[in-house]
Image 1 (cartoon, rainbow, N blue to C red):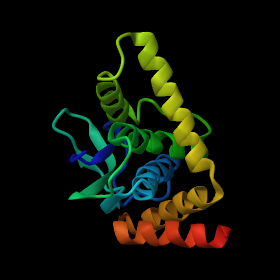
Image 2: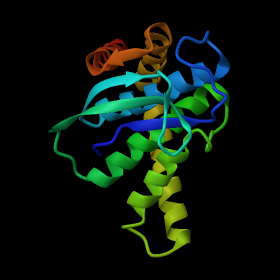
Image 3: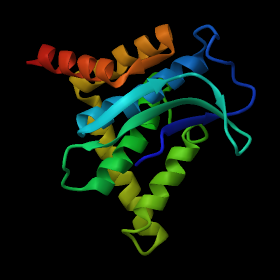
Length: 180
């Protein structure tokens, strides 16, 4: 995946200089989920941001995670890893909000369906495969180390609006070390 993972919102959402509103906190968790999952699966994250930007489609991007190009660990299943990274935003955000925000994750979910469409023949198979990967993503992010890393990165995003991939990796490594 070369494009940034984005969290899309409505035109009425506030900008990056906004106070810690529930929407801004949810966005921080969303982007933190993408970043932590990407690092845990061997992807190199350049940065994560919750700075607002206008999309060419007319919507508003509330945040994004940018990846280093051409740098990642070999993987057993590239497509599954990409889908889990895309789903991790919605899953992490739901830990704060208590529900999946499919509207905010619309760009991610369209990308998931596009990727998974190459592996299935029917809508039912797509639904089952998508749910299996949501469950797998939930399981990984519910691990205490990953949950701690998501929370710490979200706090950093709220304080600074953008963080480096190096900081995300630091929080994940620190959380893993504390669990041992």
